[in-house]
Image 1 (tube, rainbow, N blue to C red):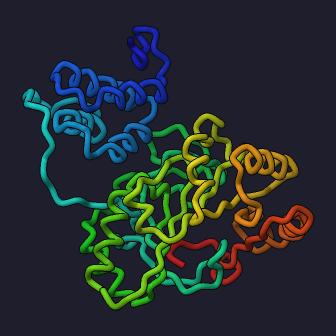
Image 2: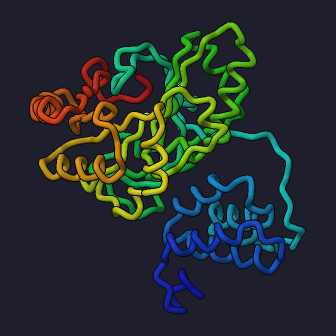
Image 3: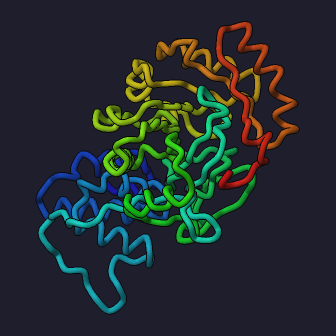
Length: 348
């Protein structure tokens, strides 16, 4: 079925295309792997970010052939290099050093910084943040759109700004990430953020294991900030201490079928490690939040409501209304302390 090609009636359907590719990803037949490669390459003009996310999320299972052809399409816009043809080779995994995709600061360094946690249960705690790149959503008010809003996508944000993927991502092995952390601070508290960090959950698990191995006397505390669309695996849950889940509401401009994943939310709601944070802007947000809390059985004492704000003026304008709602309904209020302390800046 031609889901993507306009000349054959396609409409560029990322969700259906990726669902089919995922179902067939482990099939050893070369013709099937060639079909997956074709489907992903045809999807690139429609939703490049979705293809990049798919490759990262399924890195262990995607064949070498698919990786090579699709990545060539992403880089050059063509399947093969000029003047040459890609050889058909057996579908096999290539052993390589695992690298994480982190957000790149303007000076080229990874976005790793020592600061004060500004939100949620651990507000006020000295913390090292590690920001990953890539996201599976595209919120219109996102304050870290440089992790996903590339120049060749059609996503719209309030800022209207687009970014070059090559300028905003740095790929590093976990050992080098740990070295960067060691150069900054010996603080034992960490927050893994994004983007959507659970797209790289296997690598976060390896990083936490590496920290513990290299610093056996240290008592670490690891947290992650996630949008609630992806379910963490058992290995990750054994290593992480706190999940800060921020399900996205209609105020993000993202379709409900993309931002609300029932299976993931039901699982996350059962975990004692889970807190849920909702960004509130209007009365409609209160109603939508309450419906989600009811639908997924989320405990009220695990719910934090935070005013939508990227400036102190916005915080001051919206905080009292959100705080009053928390008092009346038994939810917790979360400020954005980092905005008050440092402003809306990166790396603080």
